[in-house]
Image (cartoon, rainbow, N blue to C red; front, side, top):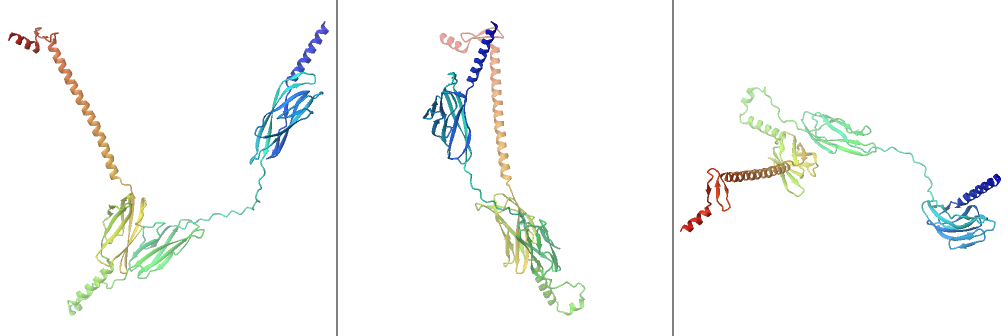
Length: 454
């Protein structure tokens, strides 16, 4: 009895084991890599022998179906194979697809399903699915031949601006790195000046500095700055050395020679000489007439600070942002006066340097005007104040109306209370005086009574 029981248990376990194996039966395919545009053949296998099967393509995954073939002399066609090998088989068949043309490596997934599977022992096998990954390689692009690496040449600076230039003595203070002409007047006693320059970069080369002799009249002194890459920039200074006075005063001159000479001749000679000296020293400039111009051609009044004087050479001028250019003319006593203005066009916001050169004959004077172009604050501030005043006035009006309304309501309320305290109205419009407790007829009732009596 025990032996039969053990045999039955073993048989049950063997059947259960076989059933478990069969339930895990599955198909598989071989993932692979092909070139762009080539055909690829996928072989479908079973992980155990089957004597009956049907395998179909459920998804091309982006490939193009070409053909299929059963490996066991079974049926094939229309994206499906079917076979029934007597002794069972694990290789079921093949499916051929064409890969698309690609420019980059691309992966495609092809799906299959297997149905109607049986083992050689005629045991049913559950349906199975599988997916195969096909990697399509893009064609290799021809790479240009590698060029030998060129040695890296450090970039050279192209900065040819100077940080500062000037002369000693009688230097000027109006230097701007992007202004290339300067005018200076020195006394006749200065026969030599020292030209100096300060570089912006150590790699720059500067020429034209050092001691320079001055002739009477205008002397042209040039300073050239050469950048590291060879770019050059020239700054020019026009230094005017004044003429020597024609006559020097001699206070120790004896009185006797003066008495011997005609009294009239000496003053005439002295007067002429002094006049010539004065004409050489003074150009007779009386004023600068300056007008601001906007882009629309409108004129804007501007004021020079300090007020113009011929012997003051530096001024400040403030203009609003709307001013694009300024026009400068000189009021002069001499009709031969010539004036040249530089830097007065296309003013930028902030500080601008304007140079005014006035010439009378060989005499020259240079004036520097610093023009500050700033925002107009007057009108904006006025508008803001007006707006604030308008808001305050509106609020005050609302408050005043509210106060008047409250006062009216209070007055009406007091009148009602006062009237109610004197008496109460009866149904016939008479009312009872609360003080005397007497009934007082209304005016309407009195009128009717008088009418009846008549």
